[in-house]
Image 1 (cartoon, rainbow, N blue to C red):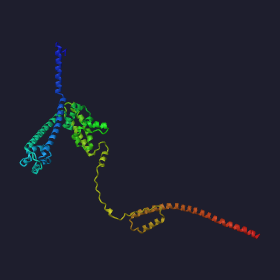
Image 2 (image 1 turned 60 degrees about the horizontal axis):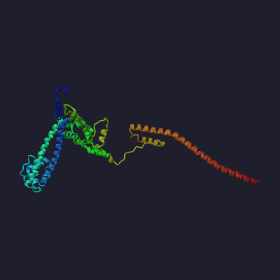
Image 3 (image 1 turned 120 degrees about the vertical axis):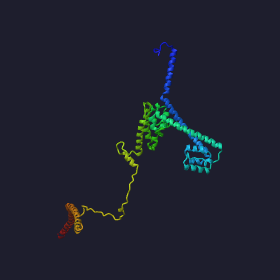
Image 4 (image 1 turned 135 degrees about the horizontal axis):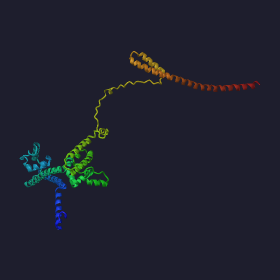
Length: 413
């Protein structure tokens, strides 16, 4: 600066530098994206506060007017309609003279007027109903302002973060930005952190007690997660957090950003959600495991017909097969039976029977020599012990003869 502007005193140079710094800082604050984020954060916080106040006011109005006309709270469940009816009608005595056709259908209007005639509520003064109507005016004005603020927030979010707004909605996106502090801070967080934003207490409690960590935080209220069944909410929140992190980075660091990326990611997530809810009918990994799992938990409808043949008490004729161990006479008996009933048998059956008889005869002829050999061995084995027994019987007879001879010899001498 001294080289560019020569001949100026030092005090003037410092004052000029200070003024330039102030003007630059004002310019940065004026056009800073964080400054616009502040508008989104404040609008979302104000919406949450308005919702709480509206709930308190409506609850107080229902309880207050319920002492006078308790049946009206059961007939009209919508809070806005309830407040408008009180504002138009006043006390229940004016129900028959009040025209409610502008805000109620005919059937509900008749029910309200019939209930007003037989109501069990207490009587209230004009000052009481005046204060209740003033409360109703406040509720209607806050409701109108909330609607206007919602439109403002939606327009601001579409201008600031279009991809994030299309993907998860303006309210959830604004809550995520408010929780992170700004859009730039949200873009710096990983998808796993975005998934559990708003569930920090549960996360640290689970880590301290060594239990399962939470699967979702603020992102639980997104439309895609709400459409899932209970078992698929964790999967969908993880996938949605990953896509939301990408969309946030594009919105924060991209130039001339449009909502095409967010719309494309939303279509992919909806297709994935359809697959998860249908039970993985399509082959994702190239195997049929998914379809088998689906069929396992879904019963197949089958129609069974009653078999009329089951009514018969007669058993089926059992065909007796000829065993090869049977003797030859049975074969000859079969031949005789066949010859007797030859006229009844067809030629095809005759051929089959002859073939079976031949096979049985061959089997018997093969077994006959074996049986003859066995008979011979048996005869030999039987003859040997008989001969031994005869020799044993003959020996004592010869010994008796010898004794008699010995005795006869001394007598002769």
